[in-house]
Length: 262
Figure 1 (tube, rainbow, N blue to C red):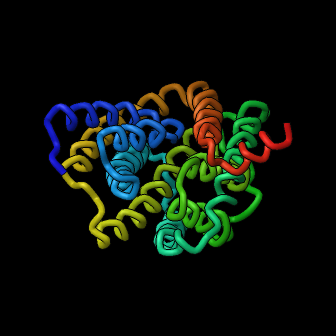
Figure 2: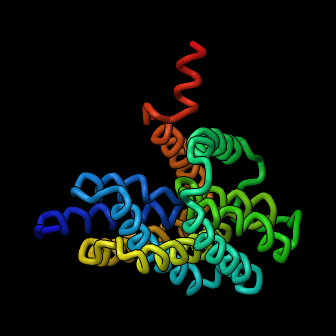
Figure 3: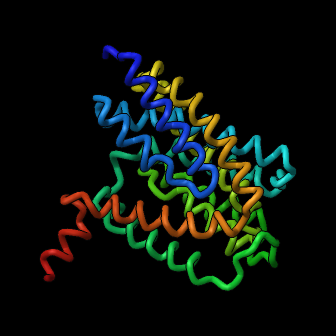
């Protein structure tokens, strides 16, 4: 496809904003994926190219959090590795899984996450007692979310986040840092498969990757400085927005079921 400089510049700007939002609370794909579709990419190429900029942004945010000592590598590393491997398996199995079930379930889960973060009493920057160990987390929730990220993707960051907060007892800022590492791993796993398949539009993806890196650095600074005061409300807004975005599709089976009921 022919790509004009104006399109590249516009997508770069979108990626900067999305990278900042994604570093704080996730959900940057709500901005970048529609922008890629509007630029004329087919859905498969748009998803693949979005994974390139998403990988760059989440990796950039991970490095920013790591420089501030917010990642405990012994517990975060195995979870990220499991998420990355599971995302490859998810991308390979994408045609075998019942997509309508995911379309119906994910908005409900996102609303549940929003309600949790909006009402939870313990929502601070301080760590609490973990409910399970890092090893069990790496064998259960981390690969489950990574697999989902390879199959579908929307809300993966929110699912990682609630796991790190509720199961491992991490404070909000540290949980955000660990989420970005797992996000980077699952994005990278999917991107590797899309690269082999040759569906990534590299000129657009690389331009957006630079924007995502810049945005992620800005977002990580804001997350560290403002902590739970910023992350908590933004997580609620992002989760609800993603749920509404998925339900806005007339083909969503949950929306159709509700319409038939009424």
